[in-house]
Amino acid sequence: QVQLVESGGELVQAGTSLRLSCAAAGRTYERDAMAWFRQAPGKEREFVATITWSGENSRYADSVKGRFTISRDHTKNMMYLQMNSLKPEDTAVYYCARRRAFALSAQEQDYDYWGQGTQVTVSS
Image (cartoon, rainbow, N blue to C red; front, side, top):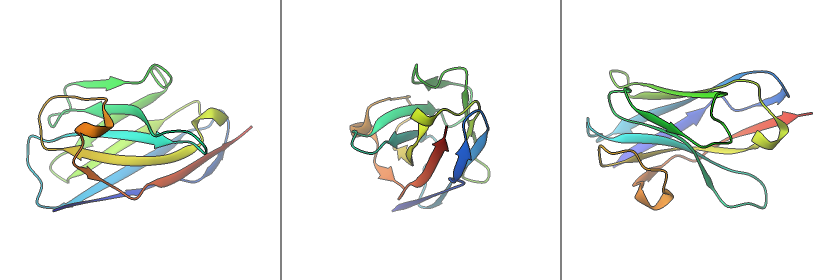
């Protein structure tokens, strides 16, 4: 089993920055891709960003492209999401996810392990 624990969520003002972290523990596989998803109140969970094991390749949702940066340190089993120029519409619970495959995916059903989420609230 793989355990994922997110941290870093908090209440911030629009226009500011925040960095989320995801720590992975347990039986991890070196080639796993990872991702961030988010779920706003009353909405379905949506894809935010994904990254390969090496960190060389990544993909972003159009809504965050240019503002968010995903990264990972596989030597520490950590993944990060740097969020800049935050907007009220970024308010959501952010989830860390991991899949037992190398390829990137923006599809929720492709991920095998999920964290409990961390709340990000952006005030206007």
